[in-house]
Image (cartoon, rainbow, N blue to C red; front, side, top):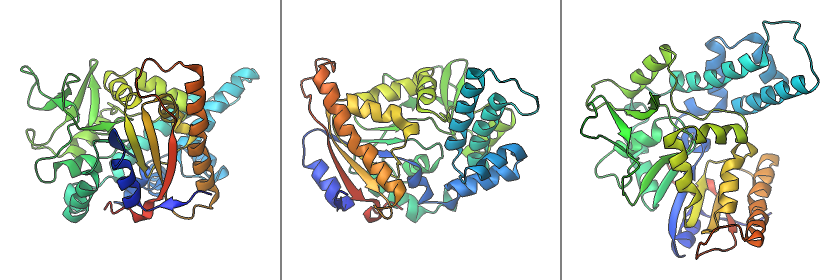
Length: 349
């Protein structure tokens, strides 16, 4: 079991080395700010909104409230049924349709449980989050909610851009993705977000300052019209990656992530197999020298031991990449140093 640094020591160590310093935020980041984003709350919201009883039975059977785990099971179930040439006897229960039901229920639950306005989270928390993010060169998140975006709107200037803006013919009612922006510091939504949508192949961002309509109201109106936001809610890593590759914005973000240099800290991210596409990108990116993984709670718990093992396994995966020599012509190709810090010592909210 590795020793745990404090967050301040991990950040200082990262900043003392060459290269840029990035942070990747997972679901634990949002859960720390508001109980609405806990798996249990989202599951209860989905149940209250009419999640089918036979789908609820799956959550109960496997003792989980994690939607991604159920999505993975439904995906595996479809493969097994096809592999063994099983024929359905009850057409009202279709694993392919239920996969879509669970995926959409997750997005609906986040939107319906979401705080209405930034004041529901509170200025002290949002400003604290701003201070927490300030030392980093880039911020990435796998979350869909508006908390990070709301934090970016508190006080000016905010040092990070999200790549959205307006061209000469863009209406005032939304912003569009402008990948040609040359900002030095970015806020990246790796798996999309509730306030992002795709219309006719164009990725747009909902805005409130020129519309006068709250973001959450625009999001809910879009969902009511069955127009779902740009989010990656698939259960398996390979499916997530395919979804990313199908979007101009998401693939642009992922390419940026694949080419980061320097150090990466993670906070509230479970290093799960459902995010193996991100782990694979870290292993293959030989310009990323150091990874600092936040561990919340007892490091000897079964979940944390699995998370630590997966993170430590990246060292071997990086060495395999280096051994093949298939890492391009990057001048700064090196091994990966993985360290861990106590996430509870980070003053986020």
